[in-house]
Structure formats: structure tokens, C-alpha cells
Length: 271
Image 1: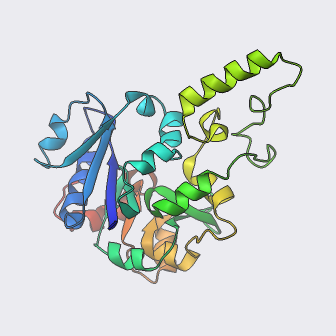
Image 2: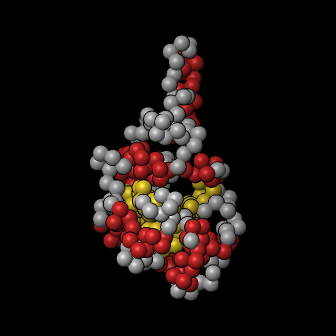
């Protein structure tokens, strides 16, 4: 029988910053009653993390997935990534610039959404433009896997990150060359979506918002996204949320550290 939910913390550096270790420790303090997995490149020195949390479960993967932001985004859009946690229904992705305030994880799983993350706002903070940031996000594993299988053609005008070029074989080529290219693609991608894995530029959460969040895919509404997480313009979202904190947040020191400082220090951290 599948478990309900797990937390996945991607790490890539042997020398995390102080704020990252604050986020790391807080995840285990608040969500420690759930299965938590650290996913890291094979061979990474985990000494700094063990100094904060002595014991945790690690899944080591090919370092190539962490070699660039592009590769990391492709990791989270790969069948391989989700297959690592296929025994669970839901996954909370918790990056090292996230912070969790309360353990409302079962509540959000019971909502039955396929994906929920912090709302995006325009630069002025006057309008919510979409949902939702993936740095602190909850997703239904089977729904993401099913959706990723259907991303084959993307309008270049709307999403220039993924281009048709390179995916359409010209019939003028000798058939043996076509077969050789196809064999190479299969050996590299092996059940992965080649449209995604061959892309030259990609943001995983934008692709989910723009292309998976349609038809039967159940994206959380804005109201619940605000209750779940903040990212940009947390002061605006705090007002929208009637002066209540969400379950967690993302990029807390990047966008508005003065806003977050008193809330995070209330948990005993010195910032």
C-alpha cells in the first residue's frame, strides 16, 4: 500500500550557507513525523548537514542532474525523479531556501490537489499572475507523471524554452541515420519525454503551470495557494491571507528578509 506523503530536500553543495542550514533544520523540526529524504549528487560530503541533523535518509543520484539549473529543472520533470518516490501518493519539495511554520501536510494532501505552490505576483505586487512556485510545493506524484507524458509540442511563441527544432526528423535523411539518432535518444532518455529533456532552457514550475495545469489536472485555487505558501511580495500575501502565516514559504531571505525575520526568529533562530 502506498504511503500518503514524503518530503524531498534536494541538496547539491558540501558547504551550505547558514540560512540554508536554518531551513534544513526547520524541516526536520516541524515535519519530522513524515518520511524525509535528502536527494544529493553521488559522492557529496554531507558533514555540514549531519552537524545540524545527525541522521537522515539520503538518496544519491547521478551528479549530472545537479550540474546546472537546467539539469536540476529537468530532474524534477523526469519520470526517473518521481519513480524514486513511487511508493507515496504526494511529495512535498522543500528546497534549502524554504521554511516551514506548521505541519499541515495531511490537511493539504486531503484537499486532493495535483499541485499547489506559492502564488506568483507581478513586479509591482498588485496582481497575482499564477500558481505556483515549486521550491516549497506539494504535488500528486501520479498526476505529474501522467501530465509529463503528454508534453510533446509547445508553442514557441508562448514558451520559447522548448523548441521543435531537433525533434522532427527530416525524411530526406537516409533511414539508417534516422534509426541511429533514435537509438541514441532512447539510450539517453530511456522512457523520458525527449521534448523536455532536450530543451535548452526550462523552469519546471512554469511548465507545470502553463502546460500541465489544464483538462483534468487539479491545480489549487489562489485562495488556498495563499494559505499554503508565500514567495515574492510576502507582505502583500500576508494581507490577502488576513494576517495569517501560510504553512511555509520559499526564498525567504531573497525577497523580503525584514518581513520574515521576526517570524523565523520566533522559532529560536538568530538571523
